[in-house]
Each structure stands twice: as structure tokens, then as C-alpha cells.
Length: 119
Image (cartoon, rainbow, N blue to C red; front, top):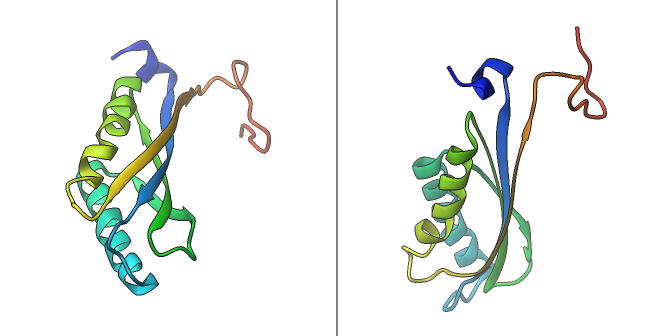
């Protein structure tokens, strides 16, 4: 057992993924394509995905992606695979990925977040 496991460290990652969807000509078509993309990310990487921007634009989308893992390496591997999985569909072009990886420790003395408490 590593020190991270013993201390209950939670590693997490979040990403903002900006997409261009050439050839999409309606919001209905966009929604169908995004549902498939979200399902692929969830099934293959186990991440949570939500459309967080450009909801009213046919050929653009912004996805928010979140994940938690027991190691920093696990988070980095998942974040590195986002683009490849999305671009398997030729109708999806990834314009930009902005991501952040960090961790939370179980020890309240090291990092107590607002709204957290110990029992």
C-alpha cells in the first residue's frame, strides 16, 4: 500500500473540451452526436460528462469532463485519452482541451475545504 492510499488521498481531474462539429446542420443532430460522444467517454474512461457551453450553436460544443482516481497517474492517463476517443468519430474535431489535475488529502490539517467537516 502506498503512502497516498494509506492517507486516503483522492486524485481528481477536470477538463473543458471545445469541439467543432462540421457537417452538423441542426441542434437535434448535434444532440444525437454529443450523446454518442458522452456515452463513449463514459463507457471507455469512466468519466462524467456534461455539455457546459455553446448549447445554442449547431457546430460547436463545450464539454465538461470530471473523474476521480486513486493515483495521479490514473488521472493523467484518462485526461490524455480524451481527444483520441472523441476524434474516432470523423464528425468531431477537438479544438482545445484545458485540464486540471489535483488531489485532496484525508488529513484535515493539510487541506480543509470550505463546507467540509469531520465527524
